[in-house]
Image (tube, rainbow, N blue to C red; front, side, top):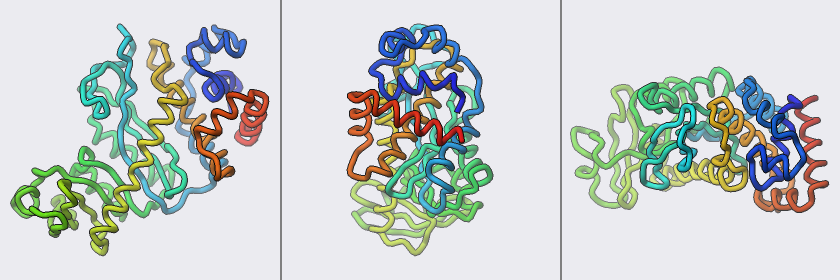
Length: 314
């Protein structure tokens, strides 16, 4: 692991605030050194692959989950690359960054694999999601059991690409999606109603109404309840976002350059992966309890961080 990023990683894992000034106060690291490390360019995509392979081995099976999150910067007056984006969590437009994520999960652990920064008036989030699944196949060499996403990502061209890889999809459709020449809300009226139809011009699927929502899959053998159970496996990506924001201070980086924001995000993901590995070993603990312990007992936390740094640097 590049030594210049170690002080910042330690501050994310054991600290309370992540500004260069607060890191200097908490740990004694140089303010200017932290600032310089944030603006350095580094091949984080290749590094994350190496980290995951060293900590978790070669990934196989499991589920790929596509979703996006907003890194809100409500108090920033000027920040490179930031714009006004819609936050579904807050249900309003906020100033900040919108990031499309791809995570892998086996139902026990959930790992962020890759992400792309969305920029208005540039590539759409569907374009970015297509790039991410392309990387999952050709860079990560994955063969997931299912790919999971919500209504926003149920775009025909994304579904076509996923199915072209011989992967199955479980997702949600909007109530006005036209299937078999009629909106779903008019065709599937009662809970449990099911139909088979063309999800895209190339792909058939099963669609079921569950309460007031509509779910679909390209795996034609799945039952209603199996489909819903699989869709619920999408939830762990929300837990990843929550931990990154609440514990690793994903939204607190005050640097104004986009490069610094990129380094901060990648550092947060690396810290998350270390916690996830520790939780895999200590099954009785949670990510949150491990972090609290490493904060309260700085020597223990520092020893564990150094252990993982040695593993990743070997």
